[in-house]
Length: 356
Image 1 (cartoon, rainbow, N blue to C red):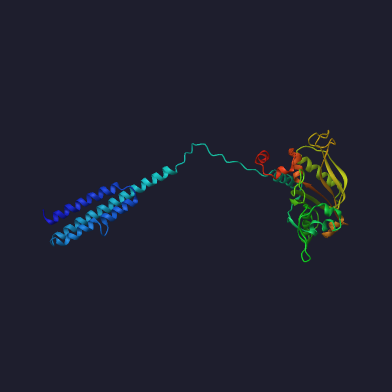
Image 2 (cartoon, rainbow, N blue to C red; image 1 turned 120 degrees about the vertical axis):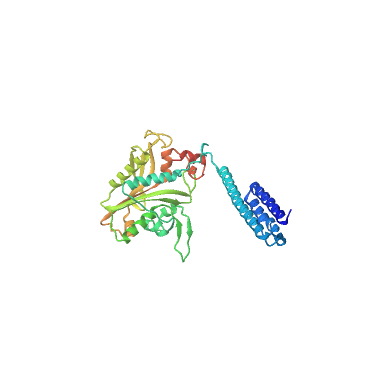
């Protein structure tokens, strides 16, 4: 056998080995390693070409043609094998990521608003329906907005009854405190209203958190109040009673009788405690209402002239009514909740039962 025939036979053997190896490659990395083995600079095909120098001048071009043909065939085989491997990998990935849409879904617990927040939203919606505008204010307040502007001077006994959380009290700084009621929002809303050059009417509902040093079955250091007030010409107690009657009947979702009992609040004059017919016994008398047939729910009255003067509203022209209610108190009455502390203990069973 001549040298050229022997070299052709060697090249053909390398070709067949390479084709078989490419077809059997299990992944792209293995295929790349085979490409280097057979077609690389130090590969087997290159190794055969080193013997071309021993051939005659006439045989060298002939071997070159054979080598080029085999090299082109192997490169095509590599591309074909690579396409097959990529397709297999894609199929494996699809199979691994396939989701059986016929399986039943995984149930996720459905959350709900806290019962106090539900109550706040219900109350705010009722007053918005009546034309009141929602207002908010800071929970850290000044003594002026929390007490002085509301006709509660430093020596006033009602000031001590509020059990206030003071934050600082130095000679250089004005005393700051956690607000004890949402009434400061009334002052801020009227101040802003007057500063912007407006004239009454002004009707505002102010829901929010308040703080007092008190904690038992019916009291919490943090609780929620809603302050409601209206200022206009010729506002009277009749307007106050009408709003209270509508609100309380709407909130309890039935017609409830109300009565106003004379009382004293420094920021209203005249003032009245508001009672409703017991929602548990319909006024017949029970353990909850202590046999009286009535439940105390909030305090109210006509805005004291001193309060209006503190925000530069002319008391010879304008008057107003105001009342404040404890949100937890009304929510407890509406849903028959016996202990205020249930709202803040985060007992999931209670919250689920109260969930909307």
